[in-house]
Amino acid sequence: MNTNEAKEYLARREIPQLFESLLNGLMCSKPEDPVEYLESCLQKVKELGGCDKVKWDTFVSQEKKILPPLNGGQSRRSFLRNGGPGSGKGTQSLKIAERYGFQYISVGELLRKKIHSTSSNRKWSLIAKIITTGELAPQETTITEIKQKLMQMPDEVGIVIDGFPRDVAQALSFEDQICTPDLVVFLACANQRLKERLLKRAEQQGRPDDNLKATQRRLMNFKQNAAPLVKYFQEKGLIMTFDADRDEDEVFYDISMAVDSKLFPNKEAAAGSSDLDPSMMLDTGEIIDTGSDYEDQGDDQLNVFGEDTMGGFMEDLKKCKIIFMIGGPGSGKGTQCGKLAEKYGFTHLSTDELLQNELSSESGRSKLIRDIMERGELVPSGIILELLKEAMVASLSNTKGFLIDGYPREVKQGEEFGRRIGDPHLVICMDCSADTMTNRLLQRSRNSPQADDNTTTIAKRLETYYRASIPVVAYYETKTQLHKINAEGTPEEVFLQLCTAIDSIF
Image (cartoon, rainbow, N blue to C red):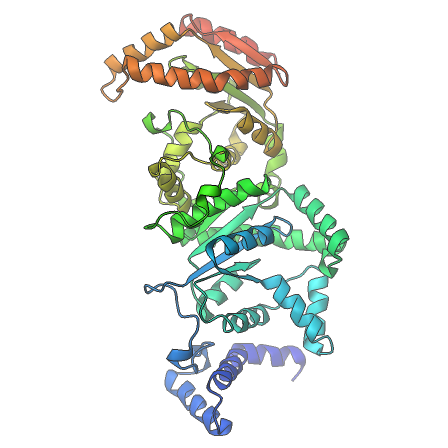
């Protein structure tokens, strides 16, 4: 029998898992007669129906099982953190662990310490070579190290596991042998940014797996495995994703809000939340008052995580014409966007409608948004940008460009859009007097029983619009093509002006 045949035999018969379970039982029970103990364990295997029925804790007594499944009213929390190498997940994991009093586990550090302490061991020497080339360590080895670490933490209220799982197989193994996590956080970061961070870290720390060749291999593995892994956790309603290509404190704020919502839904925000800067939140303006006719894409729509998991989508996205349409309520921008989309083959996106559509879904992100809004807080700009990116990527194959209505609402949003996607080719400002917008809204209210506009609410909405739009318009006047359109005329007259402006960018 050659080596491959032997490995195949052992794997097919579930022998490694049987041996692991027996060793765990020996370590926890410490029997006076280990031979007699092992005989009783093997008898139990027969009673169970074979090796495939054995789990890592089969021979661990109930009182010594230090990490029971977390789905039966247990107070202990399990929190997985994933993202591309260099996405900042280690930094964020440590900050979250400190804020909530959770224990922190870095899977990469666990493996590196084991390699360092057993350098003469042939198995770990091989694993060291595997990691140095940028490949993943063997699955069962990784799970075993995690379990042994968890056994040293019997009294922790929560655990943050950094850098795990790396693929769906690891996720399944973790759930089968340990537990189902309470929350999975995915940090998205552009491919180029990941490379820059990893190479900088290599210079500072000298980690053997941060060499150029290994870095490229790790990024490739991540790109291949990330989308299926995210899809898997989406279907289970466990994952939340965040744009990590931003200021560290902004990312930490968004993750903290997610942890509060998911792990502590019936409690006040965890200690320290008052220290977080509320200026990192986005003013959603008219979102609550706006209906939605945006088609629900359901859970089959994968989240977008920067260039890593988007394949070549980001490059294609940057080739499309992007037009921002700015205008107050009643300026006619929604009507005109529909006509322009039909004429030029554009896709019309409204941030209000995208948000309402997300709220109508049952995704983990929708629950987070709803909880934020119910607390009277503002939806983070990173979530709005993520919704926009997903909708844009979903339309890439059948569009000539994008008309984005109601965005950006502040200069900071525009800057973030430019950094993550690209500056717009054109910004259109629908210039319309307050009197005209008020009269149009009142007329709409009379014609539509769903509309509840009155002079008081209209005045408040206009005030919000003017306060937000003035600095945005000033920002784009110096940065890109900005066209102010006289929106006082008839719809036909306004449409002709808009066509002239759009023709100028082709």
